[in-house]
Image (cartoon, rainbow, N blue to C red):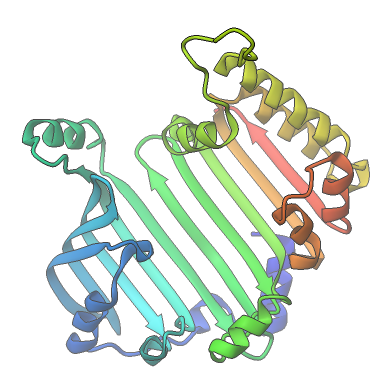
Length: 319
């Protein structure tokens, strides 16, 4: 756990177990299913069984349609605890959430093609499936959102983990939420990725589509030839390393810069555990990130300005 996060929790005087959750009955558990719209894109959740469990809700045989093309999920079991359930009636987020999902598998549905749907679904049905867990809460007095932990574990030695602390957040009502958007700032973050295929599986295609220029099969006279994808990747990696070395040494914990550079060198096929930590006592918010978000050039000088007062820690080890 990040040092800054541990200190903040101590100051708040409230460990994760002390967070309060509503006592949910069968009607409340059923009602939660009516509110679900995965990512706001038309997602649908069907469930085989639902019952109250340890003051929360236990769901079995979940079938989730994400509303994103042919992709869905089958979940044998999920458990959910919520604090501040009544806030959902007013379009507000809950005050605390604890979620546990076990054994999820992707399910593909290709319209009009039962065989391909079955083949794609069986192709990714590996091991015991995916596990997902998350625990986070909002502290009203300190105006902090604490991400105690969010994990996404995949079959094999693959997984993602995050902990963090966000300050200046006011979730009292809709107006307070809008106003606090300008004061919200990230003060501590730890990201961990254990990758033995997960980078390629999750990030390679979307990052490639975002960062790489399509290469036409033929080039007309007068048109500039676009470098091959692998050549573009080499150029991007060189630029990333140059930006990394353009940052002041004081921004890095011992060994952190070398760890990030090694990770970049192994892209797009990293094999090992990468941990990245940010300690930002003054916080990272719109004041720091705004110019880049509005399209300002991402230069070493711009990155150094964004990371003023931020300490970066990192480690990368092959396994």
